[in-house]
Length: 308
Image (cartoon, rainbow, N blue to C red; front, top):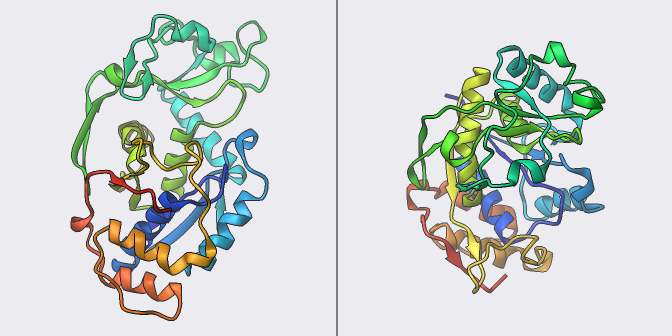
């Protein structure tokens, strides 16, 4: 099987140490397999984007020696793919319009694996889309534009992660019918990432552990759309002394381009790669990582670091 991997940052901020860990691992895994490494900018939510972040991410990756295959894909330019996927799900009766406000559906909702579980308020009441015109930009119940949700099964969705091992969820119990497109018209991450991976032929996904909880939803979507399920590997999270994941929300500083070699060596050590010899450029460290890559040696536990 031809290996196609990808790195998919969000331009809500600049790359930080956790981003570098994911970029290095996904890159090394792809190159060790003789595969392609794609770059996708996940810019689905314009209000949350940081001005200049997308270009800053590209410059940072280039400065660290990363080279991707093909053109950069921008989710903001791929809405037709998401429209087609939603249309297929609607035609199959798997997606339905939801007119609930956040307050309405969250009232009395129980906590599941990833926040509150949607209780199905609109699931059985939903009419066929052809009857209520709910899919239009302004149509719907009393003129209100609905969100669109995917019906989930009351059964286990299980897979074996290349780092974590066996993992499973009962989507009905743990998640509930989840959103594919929001009522404000913005596409939900779950649908977009599945549609993009399928369209780009992605066979292997290497990403942070925080997205492990999303994977059963994505596998169910892949089954509903009849597209291949990639192999998944969820990397250990880098956390601070308070046990918080290094992220934009926890004020992780942007990568310091004057410390490129030191930072690459730092994340290489977190991934249990052997220490590299002295090099002349950051790209040499990426080549070393690919030549010595072993996913079986990647630790499963979180890594605590203050040195960012």
